[in-house]
Image 1 (cartoon, rainbow, N blue to C red):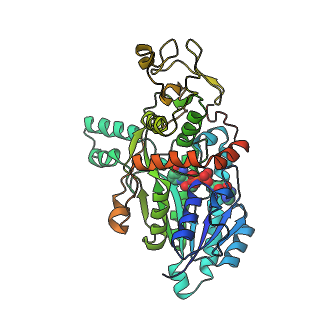
Image 2 (image 1 turned 45 degrees about the horizontal axis):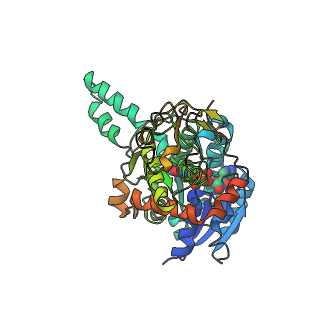
Image 3 (image 1 turned 180 degrees about the vertical axis):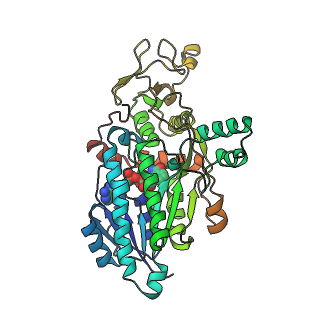
Length: 415
Ligand SMILES: NC(=O)c1ccc[n+]([C@@H]2O[C@H](COP(=O)([O-])OP(=O)(O)OC[C@H]3O[C@@H](n4cnc5c(N)ncnc54)[C@H](O)[C@@H]3O)[C@@H](O)[C@H]2O)c1
């Protein structure tokens, strides 16, 4: 294999660390990990590769043009994979400025550093240089709203009906951008910048837009790890709104393999959507986690909600209305009928006020990357979720240290 040097931004984050581990453990490539180490960056996720001589870490901010230029000159990368970002929707509602700074300004700074470096290259090194920007399916907005407008157009006999309807069932690479949150708007902006640098300056870029990831080393404020860890602690499992928001879930290691395929084999100037064909309502995901935990970690401590008590989510600092899963007495309906029945982690589910602007449905059409690059996910949702729960059960030290740090488990993004 032709050994290349990959400059990875955000390599200490959830997905970036999976890419770094995959490159070091399963290829002969070199990695330079450039990460600012915000609250989301964690070098302990890279403990398995940090001693490898093909791995280098540089703590740096992608918004710092001078440092970015120095890093390009020092490490002479063949491939840039740009994952550094502020990535949590709820945090973007509380403080959008940081998202504009890192995701928009930072991407522009990195593009300029890459362009200056690429312009200094000659021959094959210039021809094979790649800048791969990693983005999200959230840039496409709410699929449910898109479907509704498709149906409306049909009623109105609009000429756009068939195109809208084709786009409405799944996000394709040509679905128009319609971001809803400050996070997705900042990612959409960065995607546009990357395309502009390709069209205007000829910088050899690639863009990928991926659905929701889950798996090991996921920061414990995101849905799946939050639910696993709350359930293990016997705390309530706060589900936004009615829990019917649909996401298309992809195991993080499948995403990492897809990204490396795109960076090394993708066509310059192209966009590839990446998804796992795993559309699940949030409540289904939470219930599936509970079922795995009931089997792998049955808990004596369940039933923390005493009957008749108000349902309270300590970690969110909010008082929730009683939920469809909760009788007025606070007990799950199944327990009311069968008081002796074995308790499930599902008893901990509570429904909390929905996130403002919450998109109802995202779902990816990943047929282009499958057809053109031969990538398919290895995990189903069932196998990936089981692996994820097993990982959190076996890696308490990792998540306890994250929880002891700046993350206090407070509710974010509620206005
Ligand atoms: N998590 C998902 O489900 C998902 C899905 C699709 C796309 N994405 C995209 O993939 C990328 C990685 O997502 P993630 O979930 O791993 O995010 P993450 O929040 O776990 O990690 C982001 C990393 O970027 C670093 N970082 C932040 N600001 C920086 C800066 N100014 N300079 C240098 N480093 C900085 C952080 O320290 C952290 O290590 C993001 O661009 C995100 O938009 C995420």
